[in-house]
Length: 322
Image 1 (cartoon, rainbow, N blue to C red):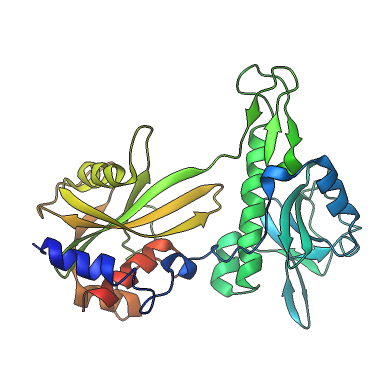
Image 2 (image 1 turned 60 degrees about the vertical axis):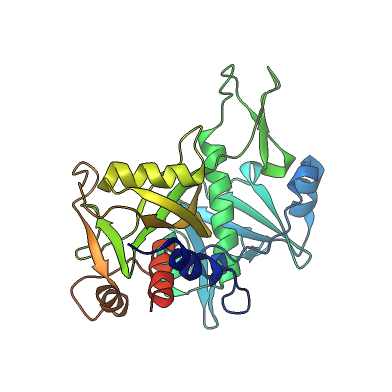
């Protein structure tokens, strides 16, 4: 077993020494959002003002995917309102995301399911990150917009009285005109953890994973739980491994549709695995050498792609355990 002192030195002190490592979340996909939201002070007039602004930019979505405009200079995912005048999007359901460098950003959904006219096309969110088609800041604000639009689409009626709700605060809230209940955007917190024992780490795979891919264990944080206890519970349920210390690594907005992944390292106090076959197809310990081969793709097994916080946790473990 790794000692408490070594665990703290490897996975806490080094991570939070700002001279050695940047903020870990900054390395995660969808994390480069620079929009100034000021959501507590927004109202209907702010949304209307953004729509009137000739410099405003808008992210559009078609059949659930971001819209791109590709020309000789590359791909663009934030358009002026003039550029999108002929696209049939639902401006009434549109939302004001915030400002970047003084420019307001909006988001809306195209109503028709028909193919888009050239030069517009779509690319799914994961491919948008993997291909690097647009800047990281735009990827983050696109994810921001999709999470909010999805929430609005799935929460049109009041959960208290069933009446139709109205969009308020430029899209950051909904309010019921009948009972006056306010409804706030949903965010689903998920604990994702890399369990470590000395220079070994615990990885598992689900049947839906790509062939040969292993990842960190993960699960939703339940009501009445701390992050640390959620980590301990999930690892015990899925692998029957006892966990003592839990240390935070980073977070990642995950717009599928509105999840926040909270990454941690967890110190194992036992090593015998009893796998939950209903959740996992396989679960086992990997040495640092095996993980190195997985990260470089030099073997049959692999980790999730760099866009996933699981990859960043595994990469940090590999770098810190050498």
